[in-house]
Length: 385
Figure 1 (cartoon, rainbow, N blue to C red):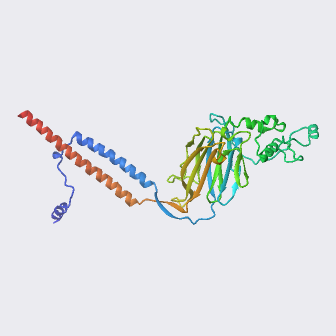
Figure 2 (figure 1 turned 90 degrees about the vertical axis):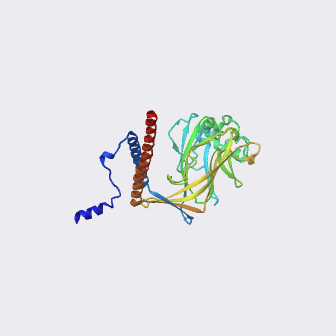
Figure 3 (figure 1 turned 120 degrees about the vertical axis):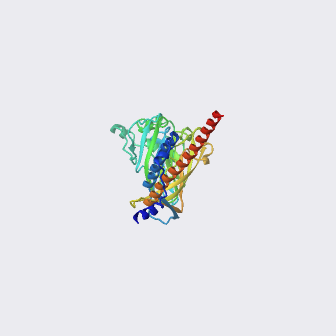
């Protein structure tokens, strides 16, 4: 009874075995087996890498978040303008302006080959120090000359900065600073001489209001006249400044691997026609990234449109040299969420890889074996005939 049951049970065997004496092992079969095993291992490793990496889902919805500041991280090299003549200004659509920003901003002096001259310095707010003069000279000169730029007889220019300010208010071009008595022993003369003989790396971050706005890096002292933003580059002309620059990094928040958070990294703005105004129009998309451990990262992705034009001294409407970045925020927000992958899905894919490679290799081996046998038999019959 038991033997009959076992005999009937064996009929369910879908993998009938052949006798060892009827098995033929060939070199082509060995080659196909080894190749199939290698392919199988590579596919399994690829599937394992996919399983270990999180699955990222993407959602799109209207941005209703409030209260977050917009952080701008940047690292930009201007290889042909010294740090003393470069300023960073920012303004937004709400009317708030930040001129000559220096909080959380560092500048590193570079030579014309891009080699650092000294360690980076954090910018400090300028503080006017008293004029370094001996007592006899101070007693003798009580009111310095403004060299014709004074608005009245009582106006005095006792420092080099006073003379520059008087000329700026008059909107006159500055004369040679070496001919001005107040500027002979002033550090500004050295800064002027090095303005076009050094480069500068300016980097750091700034936090601005979460509204559309712009910021720029340009030569000259910036100020506002009649609601017009201008840069004073005296005693130079704006056309002498080479605004070639290298954007090492620019992002609006934390960098994430799966997002387009820094598309401008490594971009070079080349000025081939003297003073050039580089304009970058950025469209920012607020982004939230949720990791597997539920850590939430607030960042921003952005796309960019680039434009540049040569700045003419004749037409003051054409702009000024520098790198200008205008940005606006999208009303939509993207949310990325990391999710773990299913172990069942992983096991199913492993079985599919093993079974699929084994089956395809068997079919290929059978076709190759029978083809070679048929070819061999034709050769034997030809010789016999």
